[in-house]
Every structure is written in C-alpha cells, then in structure tokens.
Image (cartoon, rainbow, N blue to C red; front, side, top):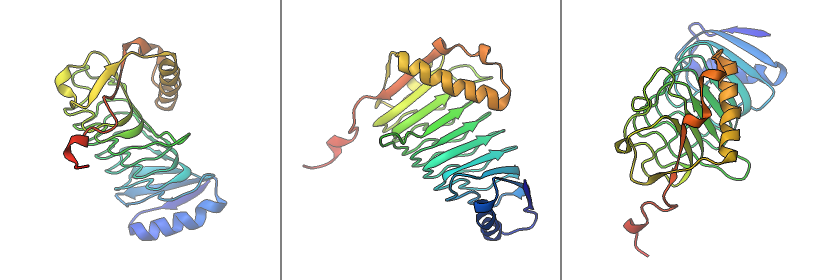
Length: 243
C-alpha cells in the first residue's frame, strides 16, 4: 500500500499526487488530511483511497469508480455529481452530500447535514444510493429526480431522524425511512406507498452492507419498520410554466 502524508500540502498539490499514483496503485493511504478539497475527484475504478483525517468539500466529485474510505468525518458536497464507485465514511458528513449524484453508493455511519441528495438522478442501471446510519437535516431529497436514499435513524426517534421539508420538489427516486414519521416533516410533493418485495430485497442488501462496514448488529434493524416515500408526480411545478 502506498502511503502519502498530506500535512501542509495545498489541495491542488495533494490531488495532483493522488492522480499520478492512482493508475499504478490499488490502495493508497493518506495521512493527516486536514480539509483539502476535491480528494478523489474524477478517479476511475481500480484504486481505493484510505483517508485519515477530515477531507474538505467535494470529496469524490465526478468520481468514476474508485473507492474512498474515511476514518472520521467529511465536510460538504461528498459525491458531488459522482458517476460510479463507493464512499464509506466512519463518522458524519456535511451538507449537500450526493448533490446531482448519478451513480455509485455512499455509506455514512452517523449523521448528515442539510439538502442531502438534492438533484440526485438516475438513468438505466445508473442508480445512485445514499445509506445514512443516523439522522439527516432539512430538505433531504430536495428536487430529487432519481436514486435511492435510506435513513436508518440509529440512535434517534423516527421524528428526529429527518429534518423538515423532506422530498420538497421531489419528482423521481425513492426515500426509505424507519418508523412512523409525522406528515409535517414532508414536502407536499411526496406520498407514502406500500413496500413491495423488491423494496425489501434492496433494503436487506444495503442494510447488511452498512452493518458490515460499521460493525453494527444487523438483527437490531427490522426491515418491516421502513416506510417508502415517492413523488406524487413527475412535474411538481408544471403549473408555474406557460405552454
């Protein structure tokens, strides 16, 4: 495994080194990460980055198949417009995680900030997925056009597991939340629907991965506690435009 030290490295200098090393190294550990931005951006598959510290904004942006494992927390914009790959965060993440995300998976052990999953989209087999262990802030899934968001709410009551305005402007995708959550938490563009067999298969797969990554007992999460939320229509603001 290649080991790099990010101490006192400017973010551009660090990223230039990563991009030079990634094509010939399967694993790279980066020590002393302290807010450097854009780590892992545009990286292709074949390399795993292990980050010790706190990466800065837009980690994994436009990523094309690489894997990133963060030992602690991450700042805003994780997975911005990410195409493919996997990000595992052993702490919490900031705002707008998964912004315009187009593929891949992000697993967060604890909490995430505001506007997570905003403008997520999907096409064909490209289905982005966010799995959040703790809670999510206001505007979860705002303007969501596709993809999957799962909030486990570990350590929180169902009402505390998400902020307000969940799914505001949502016109595609699916959000899975655990427990009975009051209706005032949701945007008016969202409705609850019954879970089907394919939903339980998806939840089982993703929850098992979460539990394996973060050493959490799978048997403590009952899949029957989940509720599924989808958009009421595909054009929530169609009445605002002239024909």
